[in-house]
Length: 570
Ligand SMILES: *[C@@H]1O[C@H](CO)[C@@H](O)[C@H](O)[C@H]1NC(C)=O
Ligand SMILES: *[C@@H]1O[C@H](CO)[C@@H](O)[C@H](O)[C@H]1NC(C)=O
Ligand SMILES: *[C@@H]1O[C@H](CO)[C@@H](O)[C@H](O)[C@H]1NC(C)=O
Ligand SMILES: *[C@@H]1O[C@H](CO)[C@@H](O)[C@H](O)[C@H]1NC(C)=O
Ligand SMILES: *[C@@H]1O[C@H](CO)[C@@H](O)[C@H](O)[C@H]1NC(C)=O
Ligand SMILES: *[C@@H]1O[C@H](CO)[C@@H](O)[C@H](O)[C@H]1NC(C)=O
Ligand SMILES: *[C@@H]1O[C@H](CO)[C@@H](O)[C@H](O)[C@H]1NC(C)=O
Ligand SMILES: *[C@@H]1O[C@H](CO)[C@@H](O)[C@H](O)[C@H]1NC(C)=O
Ligand SMILES: *[C@@H]1O[C@H](CO)[C@@H](O)[C@H](O)[C@H]1NC(C)=O
Ligand SMILES: *[C@@H]1O[C@H](CO)[C@@H](O)[C@H](O)[C@H]1NC(C)=O
Ligand SMILES: *[C@@H]1O[C@H](CO)[C@@H](O)[C@H](O)[C@H]1NC(C)=O
Image (cartoon, helix red, strand yellow):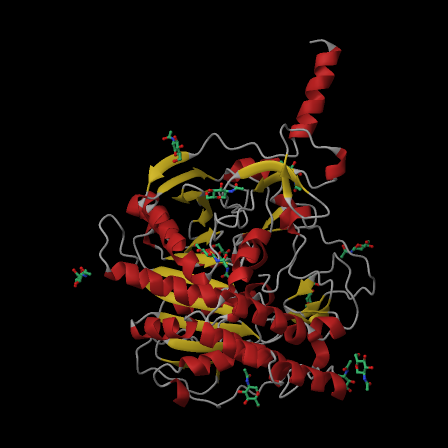
């Protein structure tokens, strides 16, 4: 080979390396309801490290222009064909479920050096786990993959005719899911059918993992997704659709959810001003408190606008209301405090939970191992923009009624909330639980959750198939901050056992006895007042960073596509 051809080839391969080579090794199968599924087996060590356990990833082709990514892990400590099946999805809208997989409850995590290590508290310890990037264009889910770059002034994705990356593209050359707002969902309600189709596709392609109960778990915007998607599943079941599978839904589990904007925008004030949080953190002076109160309750302000959205239901009214409430109510915290909305104990930038996995998900090795068509991003701008246009965030969207119906149908509904999260804080989640008004719940009391480590990590109020748990010393992503309590709560929920002890089989008459309010106060011992180094580690025994390094060094190794964190980022 002449040296000139050799150098030309090496230039080409360097250029093309910025883009993702589409997989050629996917297996096709037609799932239930006629949904086409393409998948492959993921090698040991890519995430699950146990060679005796299988893992699969792939796509459900729910529309010609919508391909939903899933990543499946066999249950660890039981026969996977006898294990329950649990789906986990993250929120956003637009957030990838790789957040849950790699930061929270998946079989593995990734360290600073890109090395995969085991998570002993993986929810796959007790269930088959299926992570889904929903809707299309989120994470590895795609509409149309294009090789292109992001225009720095407009933020638009510009496709490139060949595989050469021009200098002016900087480091934004990548394979993107073309951000077409009509090739995804723009509301919770409109995202439900493609979710149902994805489950139908998976269950048909993998009947061996779908023989027993189906359980749904989520967090954050999952407070919208969970109730609505699952009630949709129940409605589809009732139709006896030919060729479709009756999904045996048993549990709906949601952490730090965003359900009802009317209650939860008010809860921002309650959490930081009055009655306040349990960390003795009372950060605002009288004038900021008055401004906060007025932005909420003043005539024509946030509360009035949410009510107007609910009454009129117009996209423009709801979108404007959400914009007002997000900027002038929720954001007061960010403007004055510089703290992480998802964990009030840390200043920003907060290195927890660790995000080293985002670089790993953008390596050619990983992309080939899972059959990716595009680069990874933690959040989809397009999906977020589509939902913003309908003001979905400012709508209650039928979530409360859907939860009530699910409870009535005998589904075990478990809501839980880490009590250091501001974004979807526990006071708002508690108010939602009261609003759901499950049978007997008004007579239930808070009791300690007993876990195998004999440390009280929270309290629960439960009546029959409905429970609300407050988890102590935890930010938004509970399985990261309280891994043992989260795993045991999850196991009890999917096995239909009481949350408090895990020893009593649930029945409609089950009720917890205890105090009407949860009184435990952490105090300020775990509040951190210095910006942490990017490589700090979080200690789940002390509930604080191992070493507080007073440095502004920021070493968040996020992929360039994953830099933006949305309002309900996880
Ligand atoms: C697999 O499915 C895709 C998408 O439906 C289709 O384009 C392709 O031809 C199928 N391949 C095989 C081998 O059946
Ligand atoms: C989860 O399962 C693994 C593998 O069986 C085991 O080593 C680990 O101790 C389990 N974790 C917990 C918290 O029980
Ligand atoms: C967006 O998707 C729709 C539906 O698939 C398609 O008709 C349209 O051409 C797409 N637009 C662009 C700019 O790709
Ligand atoms: C669906 O099937 C069930 C059980 O066979 C039956 O009770 C129900 O009436 C059917 N529903 C419809 C809409 O056909
Ligand atoms: C906020 O606090 C007020 C006054 O204590 C209470 O009436 C209201 O229910 C609380 N709302 C939320 C969402 O926490
Ligand atoms: C209250 O706090 C805000 C934000 O820190 C500050 O700008 C303002 O000057 C303070 N007002 C008074 C009266 O101290
Ligand atoms: C996109 O994926 C390619 C191929 O693996 C990789 O070389 C590139 O660094 C990734 N780009 C970004 C921005 O993460
Ligand atoms: C949301 O999507 C639907 C189609 O699914 C479309 O009719 C509607 O116009 C969209 N709404 C907005 C505000 O873009
Ligand atoms: C923490 O609480 C203690 C006791 O209430 C108080 O003396 C101290 O000032 C507080 N520290 C901070 C940083 O707020
Ligand atoms: C974190 O990084 C700094 C340099 O930026 C280094 O001095 C320190 O040892 C690192 N700490 C850990 C725990 O790795
Ligand atoms: C976490 O804290 C506990 C209790 O202080 C300590 O024993 C342990 O070594 C710490 N872990 C790390 C990794 O520093």
